[in-house]
Length: 259
Image (tube, rainbow, N blue to C red; front, side):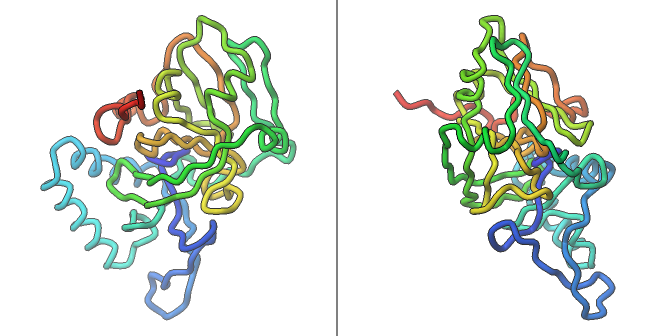
């Protein structure tokens, strides 16, 4: 439930979007890419453990981390998060490919619906962020570099209808959805990102375009973004329909706003 599409999240990386080889689970000395997607059933079980740690405190979270590390040592690292690395989750058991004519649609309660090819999105005023990325299952990647367009600026470009209070997001994986209130978008500085880790957002990380929501767990940062609709009220996203909170603040409360 974190980068997702899942938020779920991401891939182990050591550089600008590059996958790193890891030893073969067979222990035969060969190398293979750590690129197998984590399926929905595994995500549910791992996220359930992470949620328990989030809800019941650091002692349980520490025990969960120890258990995950033990499993990692036993040769199924490709299924579990690793410290200081991304782990990619997907609810479709694969990394969807963007259409050749990819455009990002912005619609719903707006005055000027938009259909933006990647080049047009990149031509809009850009915001650059360096922030930690944290998954609800407990792992975190520090100092991730992002470039994109602020969500509220994109909405303003489309002209927000006064009846709108929230954003609804859809992934071109055909399944994953998420939401964010307009107030939360302002509070977090959420961006529609087309670059991360110093390079274009890769297919594995949710490219060509994904959402990044600072101060919230990764399941809010939907991957493979295809559509943004302004709506009258927020609707529970994919993982929220499976029991996760709509308010996903990492610290349990919104960030303090500057005076």
